[in-house]
Length: 110
Image (cartoon, rainbow, N blue to C red; front, side):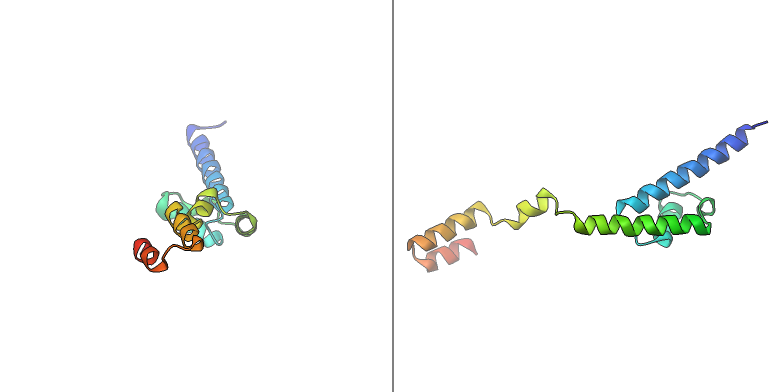
């Protein structure tokens, strides 16, 4: 016979495991230790629910795979957009190539 307490414990364990996998798959954590810290101190969850050798191994593998994927993916468009020179700098560069006085352009772009 199932009690409400058993159901609550099962829900807590499932929720903790789900969050642990999400944290591991995010690529922001190095290993089980980082995930356990985040669960315990940032989320207020008991890490004893996931503290067994098989779970540690799974989380460590997922962390490594997520970091590999993150390093292989191209940077987001926002990073690429910020890397491109501004419209003003591109216009100044075009003017300098056209023969405009360089000293006037350098003081305008600094």
